Amino acid sequence: MLQNILKCLALFIFQTASGDDCSLEISPSRAVVRFGEAVSVSCVASRPVRVLGWESAIGASYTQRDLAVQWQVDSLIDWIEEPICYGVFFTAPRQCEEKLNLVLYKTPDSISISLVNHTGAMVEGREYQLLCEVQNIAPVQYLTLRWYRGQTEVYNNTFSELSPATPVQVSSTLLITPSKAENGAPYSCEAALELGLEGPQPPPRVKSEPLNINVHYPPDSFDPQQEVVELDDGDKITLNCSVGGNPPPLYSWSSLHLQETDDNQPLFTTSSSGTYTCTAYNLLGKSSKQFIVKLKSKGKRLRTHTILCEDV
Image (cartoon, rainbow, N blue to C red):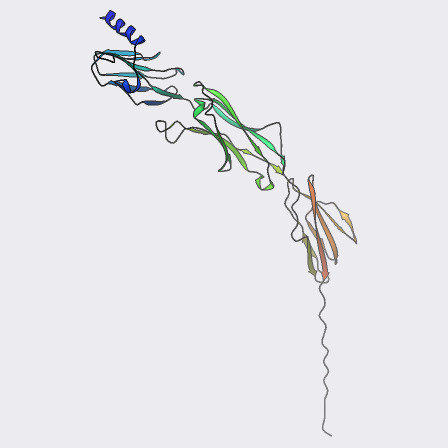
C-alpha cells in the first residue's frame, strides 16, 4: 500500500493541475495568523480522490479516499511556511494542488520617536527632523506608519514595495518647522498592520510614547504698543507689560526722569507722570511698549455771587 502511495506522489510531482482545473477547495482560502498562535485549515476534494494531503514543513498530513483533510498547527512560528494541499485522483486531471495564502504576522517589539541630530529646545521657524523606529514587525508590506501631532494625523507612509516575510526593523522621518503655537505639542507615531478582511478587526496598532516639543520664540509684540493712563494727584499706579515668550522674557523699564531698571519685573509702580518704556527680551529678540502717564486734570470751580436788591 505504501508503495502505491509513493508511486502516486511521484506522478503528482511531474503532472499537476491548479487553479480553475483543480478540484480542491481550501477553507479559509486566506489564513491570517498571529505569530505563535494555532491555525487550522481544511482542504476538500469535489470528486473521488485516491490521496488527499497537505505538503508542509510543519503539520504535513494525508488521507486515502477521504474527501477532506485538515492542516493543523498548535503554535505557528515558521516564517517561511507555504502549505500546499494536493490531490491524486482516479480520473483526469489526475493530479491537482492548491497553495494556501498564509499570512503570519507579528506586532512590533517596540516603537519609538526621537529628534535627529538635535537635543534640547527647538527654535521657531527652523526645520527639524523627527525619526520613528519600529523594531521586529512582520510582514512589513502590510504596515502603515502614521505620524500624529496630538490627535491629528499629519503624515503616513507604507512599505508595500518591501517583501520579506520575516520580522524587520523599519523607520520613517518627518520634517517639521515648528511655530510658537506648537510649543508643548505632543508628536507620536503609530504602526498599524492592515491585514485585510481576514485579519483582526480593527487592525493591530502600536503607538509610541509622545515626544513633547519645546519651541523657543521671541517675546510677542505688544498690542497696543502705546497706552495712555491717568493718575490722580498723590496716588500711585502700577503698569503691567507682561507678554508671552519662550524662554520667559526678562524686563527693563526706562523713563526720562528714571534711571533704567533691570529688575526683570513686568510690573512697575509710579506716582509721577511721564513716559515709561517697558522692554521685554530673551535670547531670540525683544519687544517694547510705551506707557504715557498723565495727571488727571482738576475740575474748575464755579464761583457764584449773590446780589441783594432792595426797594428804595
